[in-house]
Amino acid sequence: DVKVTQSSRYLVKRTGEKVFLECVQDMDHENMFWYRQDPGLGLRLIYFSYDVKMKEKGDIPEGYSVSREKKERFSLILESASTNQTSMYLCASTREGSTMDTQYFGPGTRLTVL
Amino acid sequence: AQKITQTQPGMFVQEKEAVTLDCTYDTSDQSYGLFWYKQPSSGEMIFLIYQGSYDEQNATEGRYSLNFQKARKSANLVISASQLGDSAMYFCAMREGLQGGSEKLVFGKGTKLTVNP
Image (cartoon, rainbow over all chains, first blue to last red; front, side, top):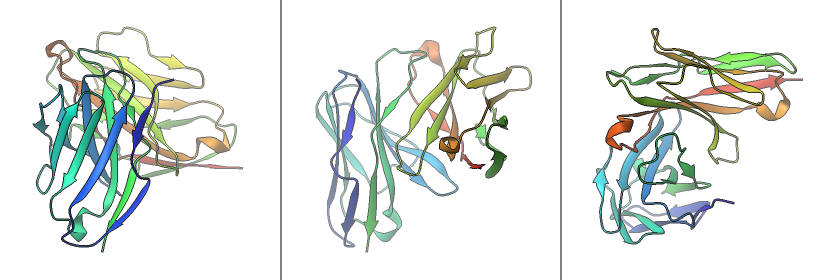
């Protein structure tokens, strides 16, 4: 059974803290993605990675960075958390070159920044 | 311009009835894919159904079917015989440029479906 896991389901941080959200997949997928989800806005792509140490900006990269040191792990970093980064964060993965394959999603992390 | 438009923020349906969730899309690519996901209150995104732009037949998966009208650029999800467990958010998504290997998905804003007993 395919699996994407995220390090925390719920997280509470303070403004200015550095925050790490971890995502691990066990499907040997090349592509990994980070989205944030806000009510009424759907899912918006923050960053994605198509290979180890490779990354590309998505639609809303400001205030975020990412790290992919190993194929199975993709980390989202909030260098200095702000209240407007309170959101649901979803990680996903998919095979390289897949055409009809879906993205597989993790359970999400609900982040609150106070 | 939005690439994926879901015009129904919320929908209600009686148990055992069918319901259609609307999705229109905008692309100039000839090769693209359309996906529907379900997101229960637990938060996980569950893949439901896929339609490729070159597929001549509408996709079906159990109680889910996709009413694909290419000329109108619509890809509506039909759920037959609704169940209480179908209550969730539903997202339509599109992947463009399949032949170029693009893996990015663009999502609509979602429709909240409530199934009444």
